Length: 100
Image (cartoon, rainbow, N blue to C red; front, side, top):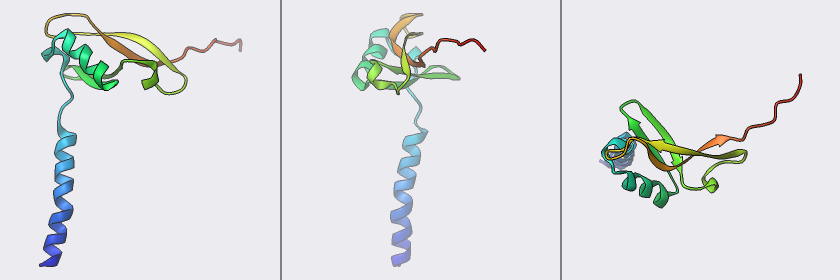
């Protein structure tokens, strides 16, 4: 009996975590422009679906990027705006090209 309780106690958190991971990312097409912008601003960074098969990570400030990345303005489609300024994407800093 103790073995069954141990297995149950181990499986329960795994199934909870699996279902949390299976939840989809918010779809910008189902959000207002202001709602999508506020989501990114309140979280600092968010991964959002912008269509059935497309997604990206959007940030509100360069502090959400890693070293050697900078901000690139990002626009996404939302329910009420075809091109909503949602915040930024982190992109690698461009490096001067050297002669070969």
